[in-house]
Length: 387
Image 1: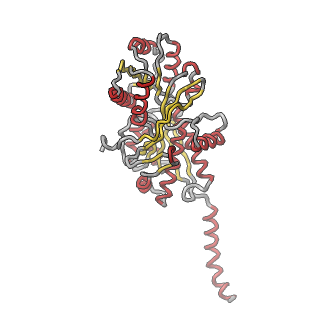
Image 2 (image 1 turned 90 degrees about the horizontal axis):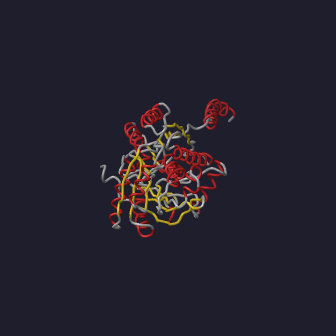
Image 3 (image 1 turned 135 degrees about the vertical axis):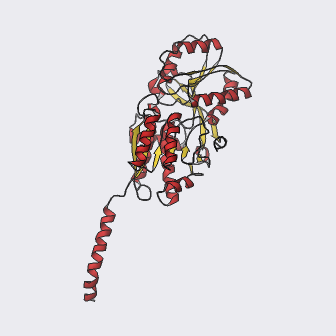
């Protein structure tokens, strides 16, 4: 027996040493490349996206990661520039070996990133409003599209506010498609489009536009001017003499407006989104509490935070369902995944878009309060116009 132990010991000790070393070595992280605007017009949306993703990564890693591997965010600021989006997306995939891409915000940057993601066969996760109808096997859109909020709120406005609508927004694809859908829905309620106007980025003086709105006779303004230009417009609108009440619906207006626009300029402005930090339900309360615990009690929480937080958890769920870290398998296992339940359910469909709970809110006395639950909105298949 002693001779047997002496014979086996030299064989066992090297195996034991290898086992101990392998257990002690850190697992290679699963990298997710985030290409988002952290400066420029849409910085408020990019900053919130990063913060939401950071919270999800911290929570997941604290519980052992995904299949035993930690997640890691590799972040780049594209400054809402499609050229930078292409540069950073390619760099992150080829040089940083990221498993997936997160971002961007603007539609032009999204199309640019999507081309790279498709070329290099890398899953891409987008988490902000857009015009709809962009389908790619490699693109997942956690986005409010026109069907999510225009169809539900136009009848509400026509019944409760007025039926004469003026549309004003940026001169690019998202506001143009939004405008088309608004016109369609206004026609259904036999309302009137009193004017449609688009503008460049970075305009400083909106007096001519405000004069057009005044002379149009419209009692509802559909404002598709998010970010810093929207902040400036609302301030100028408050100071302008209209001689009548005009209800403003500002698309993509969220909690960041409260710290960038004075309460008087915001008073009464409506907005529709899939998440507000003041929602009175268990999912929202838990998310806000965890967000404040991680980022600080004064940290602003928005729908962009929530969407990008949820996207990280969907990546986790699909990897675990696949049983391995493989992009193609991830894309197979993502459709039909659902986060939460009941009225809070967020459901990813086969067209890589979402059925989302939607809410109408209003800025009131320095707060953003939900005034109407629009229910879970299920847009038509977004592949129909692109396949």
